[in-house]
Image 1 (tube, helix red, strand yellow):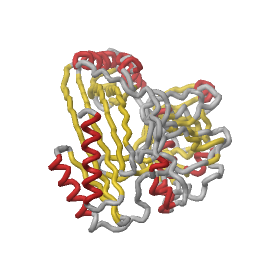
Image 2 (cartoon, rainbow, N blue to C red; image 1 turned 30 degrees about the vertical axis):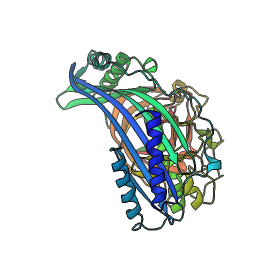
Image 3 (cartoon, rainbow, N blue to C red; image 1 turned 90 degrees about the vertical axis):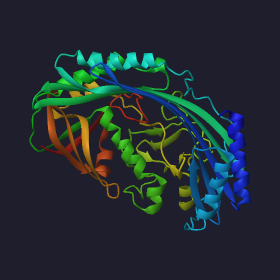
Image 4 (tube, one colour; image 1 turned 45 degrees about the vertical axis):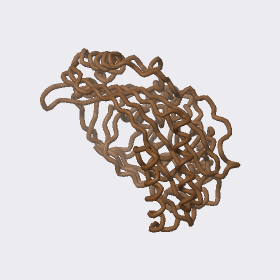
Length: 445
């Protein structure tokens, strides 16, 4: 649908909802185009293209809210949507904190974030890229099989409206490529992967490089050894180090703080990392994979210092959680078609440290370079941390042989304080970290 048609549908829904007794209304419209191409052993096994148009209605009355959605956008269907919402709202419990953004708080100007490449790629170009990626990996000496390679392209159009006059929209695009390869034979096989993602085709890492990296990583994992239980320094590669941003963002999420279920609930404006650690959430990053000009409630987004010089500076809030905590929204609402707004980070990252990855590893006599985490026994109520993993043994500052079947245990309160970061930050996804060192970790072999 074009912009005029979308505006007409939203206006129709809002007017019908108000007539049916709604005090506040918001409408979200999402239009997606997806292409996915997959191959295995150089043969195309997957070729899918899909388009979707979905609309979600939030109907608020007497401090009660319901969310209904539909992909049938005829006026008859929209009338039925309002009818369902007006009846459902009678049965749901009250939520004293539900509301929509007031007119004075709505975003006024939409910035250009360079997050859209409008041109749809050809199927042939995607086929060539996905085969190129896998072929490069299969050509690595020692790689014996493939679980496949996939490439995807997505374009999204998001429109947001509310009964206080909100009418905004933006579009974004995304490319992603993923390769999974196997090295070795019989009972001595190892699996590894590599991925890349970007907003535009020109910024996507060359597929052959992605495939080659996956193959080389798989071969390096062959013939892993066991290690003895000990307390040693652990270096987390960037792809596993970013998990600490996930734990942090979940623990400072307004819902967790309002419920009192976070180990950080009493840590606002207190030091939780060393003074060298800074963490930023930047929804306005040009070309960012999770960039967006406004949040799921129509509030302006902004670059936010989450942690500054080791000190926790803010929670991650939407309007509802902000009201519960008697604070202001931080512009972090995320809104789905069939779910109410909830707070979520965007482009969240550790600012890089001032030591190279090479020197970070070089300073370690004996330790672990961790490349994979598995299982999840992380208690965000008290911070207890225990995860399985695999990686490589570090001896006299050099990465040596592969290791597996290890378990790392500690507490996030203490781990956060001991984090040291390298200077190799790269933006590959929504949560990004440079290489990370945490000393004195309990590692069970």
